[in-house]
Length: 387
Image 1 (cartoon, rainbow, N blue to C red):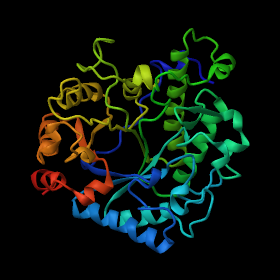
Image 2 (image 1 turned 90 degrees about the vertical axis):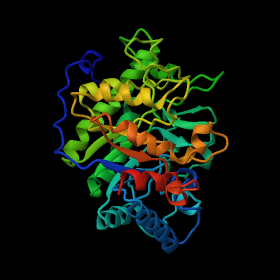
Image 3 (image 1 turned 90 degrees about the horizontal axis):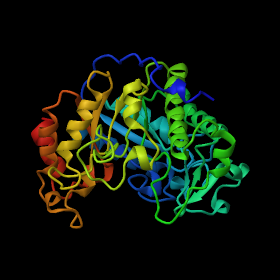
C-alpha cells in the first residue's frame, strides 16, 4: 500500500488530452431499470431495440456523448469473468441475456458519431441487505468478509486492499476488451450517511489504518488510492482512454473550510463520502470532472451559479476539463422548487456557464427525460445552445 505521504503533492499530472469538442452528454442508467432496459425480462431483440432508440434520441437532441451504466450493482452488462450478468437484464442475476449490450452500445454509438463512456459504480453490491439474493457465484458470496451492510444496502468495504484491487480488475476488464472512450464513476464511494447507522469497517481500520489517527483520514486515503491507482492502470491497459468522475456537487461548505464553496449543503464529499474531489483534480488523476450541479440558479442554500464559479476556479490551470452535471429530471417535477417549473431554467444554466471557459460541456440526467422532455426544457437547451 502507498503511504499517506506519497499521495500528497508528489504525483505527476496526467498528460492532457488533445483539444476536444465540448461535451453534450446524457447519462443512460441501468440500475433498477431506471432508463434502460425499461423492465426486466425483455428479449434480447427488445433490449437492443430500446438501446438503439436511446442512442438515436441522443443524436436527435444534438448530443455527442452517452454515459452508459455498465456495472450497476457489482454485476455486468458484458460477459465478465469477474462478476455475474446484471439482474436488470433478465431479472435473474447471472443469467445470460443472449447478447452483449456493451459491445453493441460501443459499436452503435460510434456508428452515430457518439462517444461511449463506460459508467461503473465501484463499491455498491446490492440495493438490499440479503446476500442470499445474489447469484450463487457472486464474489460477495464467495468473500462475505468483503461486504458491509449499511442503510438497507450492501457495499464492498473500501478499506480492504483486496477489495480495491478486485473492483479495479473487474472494471478494467471492460476497458481492455471494448473500445470505450472514457471510464466514468459517479458519486458513490463510501455511502451517503444514514442517521443512526454506523458503517462497520472497524476491523479493516485496525488491520490497515496504521499511521492514521482518525478513521476519516484513513477512509479518504482509501478513496485516494482507488482513484490514483485506477488512473494509472487505465493508461497501462488502454492508453488514451480518459478517466472522469461525477461527484456530488459540493466539496466542502465555506463555513467548514475557507477553500470551500459559499454554500450550506447538508452533505459534502470531503467530510461525508470521504472523497477529496478537489485533490484529485489538483493531482491530475482525472482527465475531466463532472460535478452533479443539481440545484437551480439562486437556490438559497446551494446556488448553481456559485458552484459553477467554484468548480471553474478549482480546475483552472490544471488541464482537467470541467463538465456540469445537469438535473434534467427535476424539470417540471411539482415536488421541486418553482424554478424547475420554468422550461427555461436549464437553458439559463448553459448561458451562465458559458461565462467560464473552464466549463467544457454539460451532461444531463438522464436518458429517459432527454427522450420524454415533459416540459420542453431539453428542447429549449437544444434550440438555444445546440443549433
